[in-house]
Length: 159
Image (cartoon, rainbow, N blue to C red; front, side, top):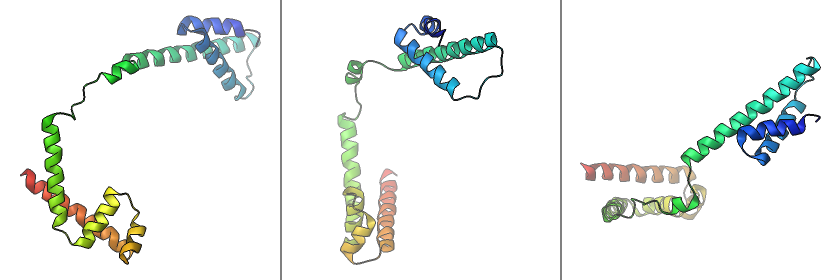
């Protein structure tokens, strides 16, 4: 506590921010409070505390530099072009949906119902089982079979 202002100044020189330096000194204090009593001479304890604050300040500075390197402002994020809106990608998505729809129509109605209720509407399998009057295990198998059939159909259409 006697060296608090010096510790804050030390951390502030490294981080370039007084409030961040305050946080670092507080963090160092909390770390030291959780440690067992040091069996070091008084001068060595002071050096140890300064070393902790210095290391935490350096870590904070590095983290801040890394964040600035890989992040941008919110406005920059709004101007990023998305590639999902191209006519080609929309056409591919539409073709994929048509293939899946055709594959599902090849399945028995009960399997279609179970698959759509689970995958599209997010209904739990036990609730679908109650609706259909079957076991949850059978619903699980129907959903799996429908998924396998859709995947096979997709692979065949890509070849």
